[in-house]
Length: 237
Image (tube, rainbow, N blue to C red; front, side, top):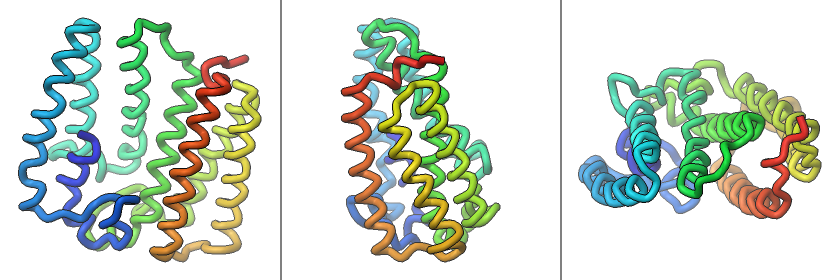
């Protein structure tokens, strides 16, 4: 649903985006190819909505409808939050709702607020990384994002600020020095990126692909660590 609706509403921007058209960053499709996407999404997700509502009750139904609603507000007019900076960043907290899905489905305790805050900041940072890579094609397509409005360097500095806050939270709220160390190294790289290596220059396609592989590998390793350590669920503050 998330990526299907995103592609359905980003045909113009994706068509001029050189990093698209591959399995790392997503497909480039025509309006004709994507015409039936909303219908197919509905057919696929409706049985799951019915099933999980039957298993977990009306609260699950409300949560799932909320998830659908967030995607509609993000992608479709008259809302289309994805082109209303900086709200297109803030609405990324919708990804964190998947954790609430797990809580309801498995009848678990609510996540600590510290964990929710960290996950929201992480979602913001991940979205901003994509915006930085898409500044030129978004401009060509007339798409307004935070990165387009405030520029590449300022957007990188915002991302750096989020990374530093996340590193602090992981270090002092969760005492997860492994994950904090990883984000600290990433922060150092971004600092060099902003002031030494790239500055205002866009990344080349090969560089973006390299970043894509690195990000996916990092995500996989961090998931394994989070599951193994359990620290992200045990705040000390």
